[in-house]
Image (cartoon, rainbow, N blue to C red; front, side, top):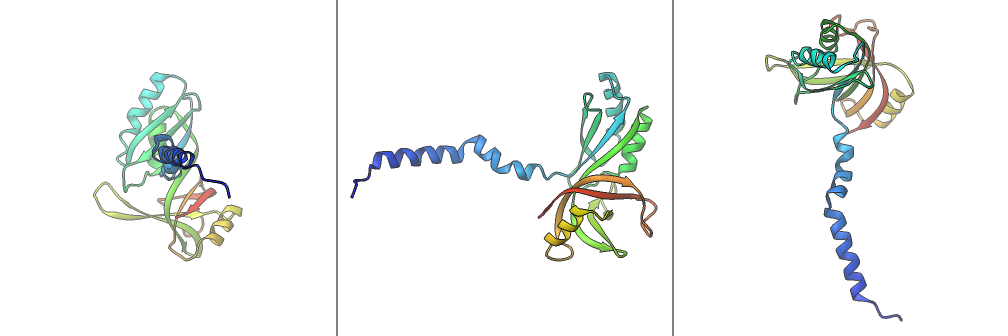
Length: 192
């Protein structure tokens, strides 16, 4: 039997403890959680200079539900982060982009809500607070695709909390409210 070297064991324990409390280790552990933030990202045609971005940012700041906006001139996109408990209306964003003199193109969303069936269709239900402080339910119909099939298989019960990302397409399905004509084509998801 070989004698144990307690000095080596102690040094290993100290190194492991240091790693576990280091900022980079903690950041890596919380990185996945930070990525699950709701947002709306809009591709914007004509966004080419800082002055243009400033003018668009002024329009975006007029949308009450927007807490933060990030404009990338290089990519031609505007990323919008909602205020806590609120939901960004895609039509308001498009109207602000047009009022700023630009053309909105593709819209990507990252949304957290409950997977439900709505009028016989798979949907995501999001409870949010409107500008008057009232709770409202936003419904996004989910387009049938492989990711939706995988999501349905992963969800254990109706009403399960999920986080999805995908393209918001203007294609109102039958019976969908007129004031909200978007269907989400899921690209990624996580069951919460």
